[in-house]
Length: 357
Image 1 (cartoon, rainbow, N blue to C red):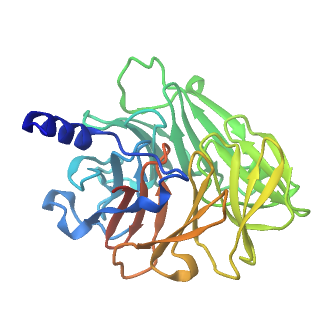
Image 2: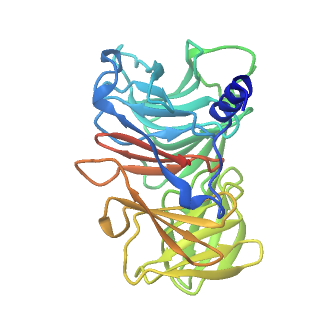
């Protein structure tokens, strides 16, 4: 093969976007980058918590240091950006939650200070950070956003007040604002559908907004649209789910029952449930489902430091290997929205998994 052609082929291979995880390639999913917090540069400060959020394509990862600054790393582990929000006293406000936009590299975050909290919008590589404040003692617990709006799920401190979701529309969008109050006309308050539903007694954890999934006493699964405060669809299950994961479009719901007897997949569109595999009591603390809903991934299964995957079609279980060394169980595990990156976070650092030869 001519040398020039060989070099061109190498360039194409290096620059090709990562493959999404599918039933055809999931056996090639493996750790491609272990990011050690101890190896970050001095300006990153000290990071000892495995919380993170990942961009839609796995290109960027955001973590938080002990000084409450958000650090943005690329998928090679390099520090590419950072920011923090200062309160009225000039000290960093306490970070509460963050999430990347589903379309681009905008990071939305919430930060708390006594009697006030801040909502920030930061574009990777662009400074300064745009942020607003709301004078309230209520506790914001989750944030997400898109091109036009920022959404915040809030728990009231007054037990007589119902949980709610805020839609924030800072206007005009072309005006850059820093540390300014949001005006009443820029805020819409919506009662929280899942948190105020008298029929539901369980809300499934780790379901990405704008969706939520709750379960009633007779095992009816309700999928909620948090932005509307309404049930978008329901389906009857044959057992109580103990953990679950939704596809980004909200159609498919992978779940294990509370006794960890089996692994199942629900199609909310048809209402049909498929038994995928038997677990025989093996507990799965982190359960993920790829966008095509043909691969279910379990991390730290039976509290072992490994990654397992199941083919939805065949039920085949594949052991993919151990994740990076940690001194405790993972703090968080996520799959990027496009399904190309599996990320595992613990006190020692992050482990990035992709489909690789």
